[in-house]
Length: 254
Image (cartoon, rainbow, N blue to C red; front, side, top):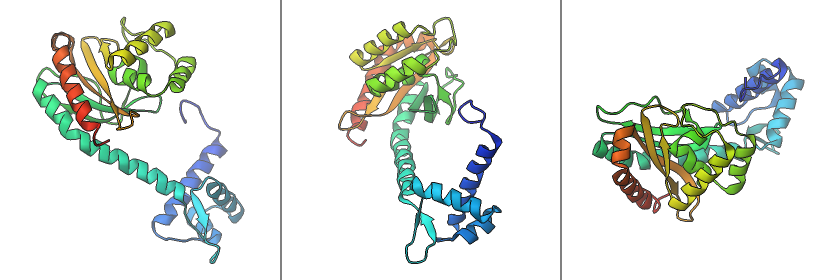
């Protein structure tokens, strides 16, 4: 299953074979069709087709001198994105800990991926904290403070596509499920520079979030603080002020 769609068995096997083929280069810098065919247990004709497809997308490139193949620049590019993300997580984590410790609350760092707000890092501190979230999980874009920030500052075209194609699932009685209401909510987030989730994904829990922008003003991620609703509503101004302090400081390094 991929993105909720069941792939035909042949397509699924081709994907597996392509991934196994790429993994062969962990041991050898260059490999030929025969070597790859033997390594993944697939005939030469099928292996040649896989190699041709991967080469076309930039994942492999052929050495003109040896006629063998090596990893292409597309993988180098994707690897650099992973490295950049890991560096961002390391950079932001001390601030998450600072905010979590200061307010005895949960702090999240998230990016838009896999149709939601993907949690890259989370720090929870204090006896008041409870939130069913973990690193690697996704929060609903329309029903979380981080998600609303990502929708608001991720570009108008991306937001329009989400409205057109996204399913506004209901999680509580407070979840915004009407597209017109969500559009108005996102407009307010853009104007105010922050987002609120007032028990829209979990009853009893609320959240305040801000976007993390780079020096050019481009969206990088979203940062949020989550806790029990009475505490978050009472301390909202303090939470927001500290989030914006961190937002401003991180903008110098992102």
